[in-house]
Image (cartoon, rainbow, N blue to C red; front, side, top):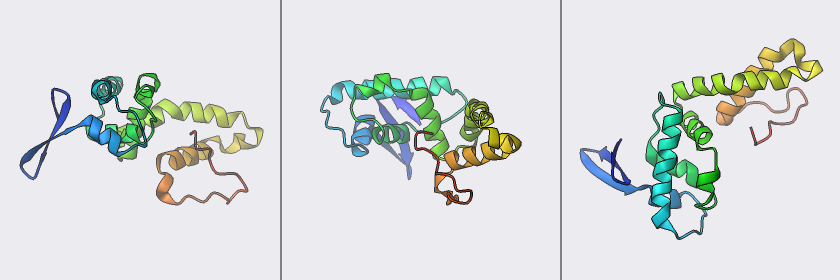
Length: 157
């Protein structure tokens, strides 16, 4: 992945391919904005901001643009979202092992703290935290949701 102005350059089967992040973003969203002139620089800035927050992680900029497109309803939301968190989520979603470790370092203690506030969960805090992390990081694995008469995890996690 090499930056060339405001487009991403990829080498596919020996040929250089240049695709604007705007077109990737629009292909993934139901956004009706037509202000593509300001969208491309905003996407580039978002990619750079996310990358700066997680310098050890690599995320393909087109993949991130597509990920953002699926989660942002308009161009104005790009400036307001927590791109650093979405960058990490995108890296986790693509199976990046470093991202999964970063996610566990960042959110693991908060999950344990939340669980420790539930009196009945105190004896199994670590086990429950492992299950929560696993369900958040690998939602398509087919985890049972009714084995303990509990509700599935909220989608906000």
